[in-house]
Image (tube, rainbow, N blue to C red; front, side, top):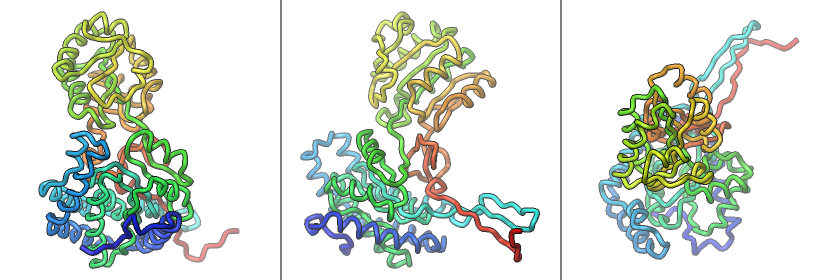
Length: 429
């Protein structure tokens, strides 16, 4: 594999290096905006082919990251996520093919109207431009983000964690090799080669070159990006997600949904962190769901009524109801009405994902309309708030913002739009 990016040791002028990367990304984005869809598909297929052909080289680069991992204080679970094996590299290649099959959004007519004077006004999807993507130390995210940004006609600057720098570099070199072969501007996908954290600040100040920043990682990183960025940021800070068990719930269904929402994978943003139960079913439901959660090692922190019904429950504080535990703890509260549940969620939640379990259609409609969250689940697990599960094919993250994108961000969310007006010589009087 050829070297396509300067090594960190070679960068003596950090500000100059960052500006050069951003400048080249901006130039590449102009080409990407008009790139034929077939060329992008060809690039994704060739990239997947090169990944499969270079499994041994990628594993060799990954070995350097794994060797350094203990020095960074990574946990065994984090080291496992960092590790690339042949099946995992194959899965990365498969994901590129999946992105290639997503309908290309660029040039799609969102809406079209004809005015009384004969003007036809088309609203058309266009790329955002240059995406600055800051993310955690998972090499597969490097390929996923590059693919989805490019599919949406954008150039992307990738700033991954230092723990995966060798693996990410090996992957990006192959993506750039494929780009050169297929007629895609190589600078459309660039990896920030320095691990200096000051580089992030440099890029966040370059609104003249970068159109949007997308951070994906811990809350501290995301808050830093939101505070420093001079360009729009697509983000969510945390995921304090709720499941509300209504008076009209199927309680067997509610047990399955709560266990899946909380226990299927605890360390992710769409995991349920809080359980609300209507007082009419609390005495029947709480002991059984508490036993289910206990089997999975979950500690319950609840209000007075919860503690009365569940011997093992601990008293909950106000901070517990606001917390994203990302581990084997769940807060719980008994509420007297649907509206009380909605008020609790809107007060303590993070506007990410909230679910209701009910057989009452009116209750589900009221909940969906009143809960201020990016995704509302009716009789389904919170774990379904995911780009793949929503049929987006891939996502670059989940947004709890209301501008410009909300919920899982796929290729459509990485676009904007422009108006194209067709006339036949009309002039305004």
